[in-house]
Image (cartoon, one colour):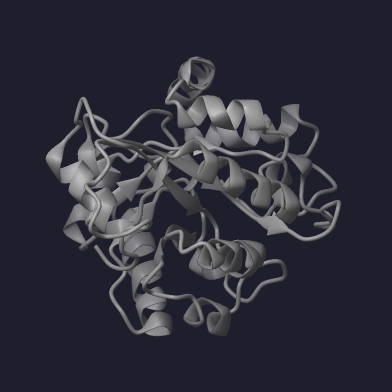
Length: 287
């Protein structure tokens, strides 16, 4: 697995289990201004001040930050009943604030992270530029693919999935000059075919939007995550760090029913209509 080593001292034993926090953008100031991007997208964005508080809370909890080496070892070994709890930090889409503000804050504390980039977004307003990606410390930050277009992979043909995964990986490797081996599936639209093609084209680890404690039964091919929102409270984050995820797992299970019945692409379009965002907003994420 390319990228970051373990945080908190490589000589320590790898955590037996870990949770993976999913962030998107980290914005400066008291309020976020993303123009005409729909509020349902930016509700997953966190202020820089709140992110600092999250990092302080993690430090006080004694939960060990997990980088690529520790994450890979834990996934290969399987769950351990004892041992220190771990927490991995991940960021989807390639927002500029994640690549600059979040990476800087994490770097000050020597905390590793995973940043997944949608390659069609590189250089767009609000998203990171190639030179910003190149400035990321490869010893701390593992850069992975989040597809080319952020389309729902499970709704595509096998050739479409293959193009998304190959082309995004190739673009990132051209920018970074090093291997890209991790994949975060946009919108959580993953199925057996997506995993099979990811393996076929050379990825070694697949991150999903399933909620849970890792390792899951899918190991490297199904890293579970829990989404952090602007409204996530310190109490909620403390509960997650104690691996108590029942409310989030229940909600995820309920939402899985319409997603499965309608398909991820139709579900995403219907959700946009129900939230009143079908007209009058810039849709960054097309299903």
